[in-house]
Length: 103
Length: 137
Figure 1 (cartoon, rainbow over the protein chains, first blue to last red):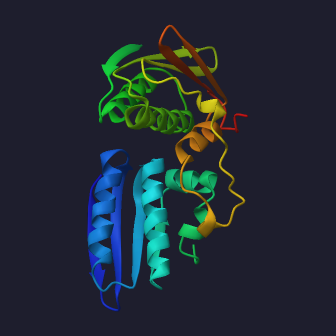
Figure 2 (cartoon, chains in turn purple, blue):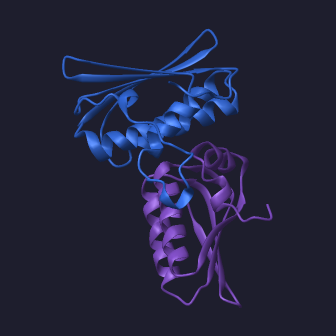
């Protein structure tokens, strides 16, 4: 897995994640998110269009930060998904909550 | 294909690579590989995180229209089929986050079996080569 973080004007940020979020990669994603949420970012978008695998630990990271940011009146959303990740979000029941609404 | 490996942090990733190599050598749909890949990764990660197992043995077989993965380990016995199912009807913000890995295994595979004997746990994952997945009860 590799990530590319793009800070945008207006308080939003996009993190692009590719390949697989499994094992240690889930920990690395959490480290990235922890660093980002310490900045004055209002909305974090996770772009998973090039990510073909997400394990339960990866989903847990997304859920945890989604919930934490919501408590602070901020948001974390998945902005783009591959077919594979979409399948996993659907079967775990988190698709509607995590995906950006216009998708 | 038979592979024996110590249970380490990279076990899941290493074994999933073997699965991909095996699948590439036979005629298996990408959807079937996708399901088995996720299920195997979740199970092996659970072994590393929770079971105290030191050794694992993986067998990959293609029989008729089924792909069969057998994982044996010498860790603490735990029947994953006894794990409480995840209730996806609970509102998102109230839902416990745990148990997602086993939930995914049940949803992605056609059959899951568990046995424990002589200090070895054996989990068998079966995926029909023409299926897209159904919940294992």
